[in-house]
Every structure is written in structure tokens, then in C-alpha cells.
Amino acid sequence: MRTDDSTFERVEEFKYFGTTLTNQNSIVEEIKSRSRSGNACYRSVQNLLSSRLLSKNLKIKIYRTIILPFVLYGCETWLLTLREERKLRVFENMVLRRIFGRRRDEVTGEWRRLHNEELNDLYPSPNIVWVIKTRRMRWARHVARMGEEREVYRVLVGKPEGKRPLGRLRHRWVDNIRIDLQEVGCGYMDCIGLAQDRHRWRTLVSAVMNLRVP
Image (tube, rainbow, N blue to C red):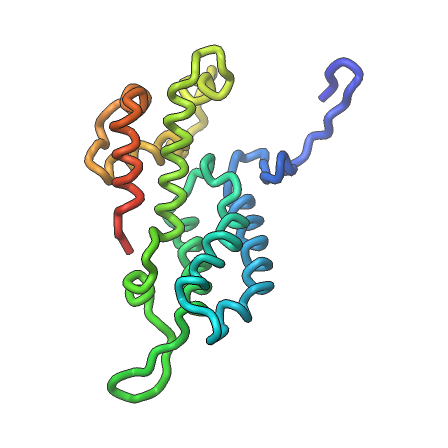
């Protein structure tokens, strides 16, 4: 594509401000990239996470302040499917198993790795998926309160021209917001209108953060 004196090559994907953008508008490659960064960060501190000299609370702080930001960079714009949610939970559970160690089986007396349900009970903070949902809702409120002259707002409320290709409707980012609202009992309300009430939206964000779902 040419514009003025500049030429832009057509590519399948490229990096923009650290985020991977694809010609299919898919978030899968970005989540893979974020997971690789998170894994590299995890490997650099895994000895600290398994050290007996550090408390469990300090290890959790290391995870939340050092590792998690690598994984969740730009997550406010992610469109998650159940498959991506499971992949993120698998990564988090790997880190938590390193933090909490193994448990001796009461029947056999052998040491075993912790089950997911046990990790949910031991980890005091919202899991990685609910952190993403909360950040996404905060960003949704910010966009919904923008003026119509802002490009981001027009992308949110705009409807593309032309005919939709055959097949099932693609899941959209705003659909994730509606699902998040449905989980706290507001699934059939206008999310843009609801976001204008700052205090009520903050209450909904807190409700999402406090959901304890496996």
C-alpha cells in the first residue's frame, strides 16, 4: 500500500507497541507471545519461588508484581475463548505449584502435586482470568465514556459496511463484556449506557474481581 511518499508491505502479522497484530484479527498469537515472555520471566525467578527461605506470601507477591505483568500486557483488549482461558490457567497453576510445593498424600504417604481445586483454595487472589475480565471492564468503561469524536469509541459502536461472510458469527470483544456482565447479573443491559454510571460500574468491576469460580 502506498500513501504519499511511504510504502507499506502487506504482512500476516506485525508488532505494534509490543502487541502482535494479525491480518485475521486473532488474539491467539499475542497470547502465545505473552505466555513465552511469562515463561522466560518465570524461569528466571523459579529458584526464588521454590526457596524455603521465603514465605508463601512473598512468593505470591513476586508472581503478581514480576511475572504477571509480562503475561497480561495489553490484556484489556483481549478477546478470550474458553481455550485461551484454559491455557492461561495452566500457566498460572504451573507457577502456583512451584510456590506451594507438593503435598503428602494422607492414604499412601507419598508426595504428590497439588490439584487445581487445592490451588484455588490456597491462592488468595483472583485467578488470572478474572484479573483480565476486571481490567477489560475498566477499559470498557473508559471507552464508553469517550466522546463520539474519538476513534476508539467509534470502533466500539460502529458497524462495518458490506456483507458479512458466510458462517457462524465471530465472537467480538464487546461480547466478552456482555458475558462478564451476565456473570454478575447484568447480562441484558446496555453496557455503554451502564458504563455512564461510574459508581455502579465500579461495583460491577468489584463483583467480577471477587467471583471465585474454578
